[in-house]
Length: 179
Ligand code: SF4
Ligand code: SF4
Image 1: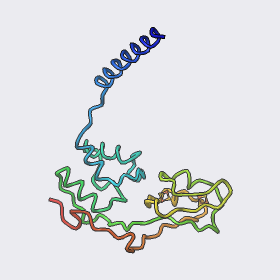
Image 2: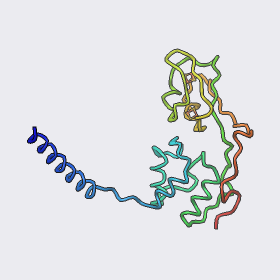
Image 3: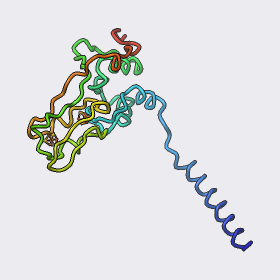
């Protein structure tokens, strides 16, 4: 019994040492700028920028491989903030300010093909094969991916109405030119 406990303890200590050494030598160095840029993006992983998610978009921005206007849901405010953080001048006068939207399904037109449900990264769509689908407006971040794939035009993008529940203060830097 004592031998078994001793062996297990020795095994635990050895494995712990190996894992500790592996964590030290295999650690991936984080880029602080990349982390800061990532925190400035919406974090909804919608993929509208062409990258898999906000982390990959931030990495490309940090390397100067993506424009500050890459994030449609972030709009002009995020583009301005990114330019300021990167210390670059960006002419955003032509940049379209996007009104926040959510997707809505006209249930009478839905044929239950499930194409939309497979596109949604935030599980905002409920439905099943050959059954009517519906969208929960709250988690929907308006990426319009479902809208793009619907074969029956059952999905429409609607502007989010400004109410006491949806209104929020503008982010710092809104409405100011970037120098
Ligand atoms: S627009 Fe469609 S795919 Fe995008 S988050 Fe909303 S429901 Fe999901
Ligand atoms: S893609 Fe269109 S038709 Fe297919 S399940 Fe979604 S809403 Fe219905």
